[in-house]
Length: 77
Image (cartoon, rainbow, N blue to C red; front, top):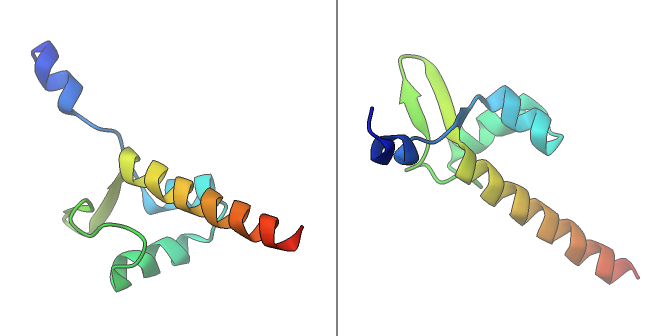
């Protein structure tokens, strides 16, 4: 595989790994996927009966979650 192709590959996460990383229940991640909420449905990778989520999408969601928490903290103070 050429160096160029290696740069284009992205790590894919399972819904369980995403849930653990975000501190959520895996059912929540599956619900977001089914309802096309939070996660960009065009970036979800599906094969057979499996679902994978690109790391960039996980990081985007983590950023939104952190921003929401910071916003809520600043309201409380």
